[in-house]
Image (cartoon, rainbow, N blue to C red):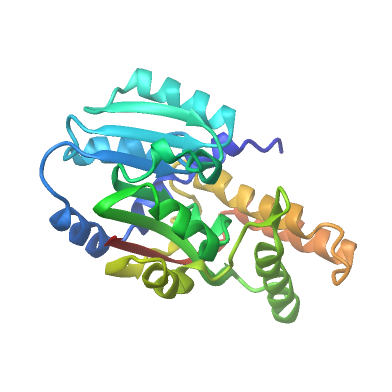
Length: 279
């Protein structure tokens, strides 16, 4: 199978839509000031959150700055917005958001900061102060789908080996480096509940936003079979060559998991948290 990250982002939209915590969103929505806002999304991907906010229809006239480090994501998002323009202006930037915010002219102006399925890719203790520097006094944040240390694949193949694979997979998130700096946290959800106040933020609401994918009558919704294959691809690329795993045993485990997807048998759960608040 040829894997495409853009296709993965497209396939997971229905999974994300089910997962987003409605209490957290409604609390944020009630707290936001009326009128147009300046919105910054860190790690905007292919613009899925832009489309979602367009459907929710409460940000008419706002300015939306979408930042992503992948040029292909930005190109895809630009095309998607051309086909379905939102009721607010969108500015796309290809950049690392932490580098983008080094410029003092970009600080202190954002009314709503969004990070969707993104903060678990950063070292949040050092990233949050930089992200909060973008925000105007009293600005709000909406941090969604922050992974929180639990991955489940069912049915069980070999319980001891299943647990070893997932423990090592989670460890790769904690040990990941990008451009020489820490870039990941397998328990970012729970850590945000401590790190946000430490960085000067106030949490207004938090709640679970678990990914839950399961077959119905042997079939998955929309593109969710591909989504599952791509999740397994993430496991493969993270663990291939790992010193603590027998390569043949890992290859066999992955082959059986892919076969479970093809047969409409695999159940997948990832525990995540949504958090909203203000600075």
